Length: 433
Image (tube, rainbow, N blue to C red):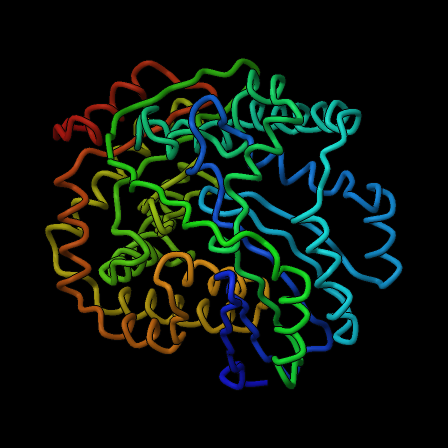
């Protein structure tokens, strides 16, 4: 079914809460999400990780239901209920049969608005989150990405903090702190309730949302200052790890800046797909890594052009030299027209596939409203992608190389590999191979 048949409807309640309906007539199920504009970027160092703890605890009991009843009420309808916390938002989701949408709305509203954070449940869930944190701390790839954020933004801005938070905070957070945080951050001005599915008429859905969320305090927008790029090198050697995990990258424009499209295309040109220069040269021709990739992570308050790879410690230097060579080649030499069209088509197909994915469509809609105050036409993005020129892509690579990189190395990191990464990407010295 052609995804262009999707229609969108936006309504704003008197308290400022936005309601989005995406009509997808071919779907056999309906997805409902509640997005709150609060996450890791809204947390001080003392509160780092609290959004994630709140997300976990929201399912542990409300004024009228305990955690077992919350799960049963969803699952007896065959529905799946879940949540996630990101840097810029927290979201609660449920998916099930279209006829149950009217039941899903008050179910999620109860979780979002009336969670009581029972003290005994907090102590149990605290241990679950600490287990999750331990898994992250023992995963060199995850550690490398956390170190990369710290190298990119330092520790003076929340962008340099991991969403999962600090162990000391998780061990300390009290029920009163969770309630106070929710009271400050969870207001109608910071909430988008969105549904996607075979919804013929959005009016009943809007009425259900108003009945469930209409008394939520209006509040004001949770604001965040964009993170200033710092750059630098961070290293963590991890016992028992046999590989060197590397994440390196540069600053990109933010979501509200249309110039970010050229950075997304440049990243796809360099390292998306087996025929891309990054994978062809590093994996296929030189055998320096099993995995290497490049992407542009463009968000409302941060933007990152990222190259990540895992390699044998003795091959790390050669990998860094080859990455630096490819970046310089794309900055100095004409952009390969075949490679550019390959990347453009790959991004086009990815964008069209995303239009068919309700969860992705709902999240994009929420980010549009939080960042731009409006819903973007997906076709506008495709038109902007089509309009990006080879000269603009080459300018991206030149801009990247004129700025300090952020580099993170985790696992088994030889001293010479660390020095080579520093010289090639942070100090920007042309060190001979």
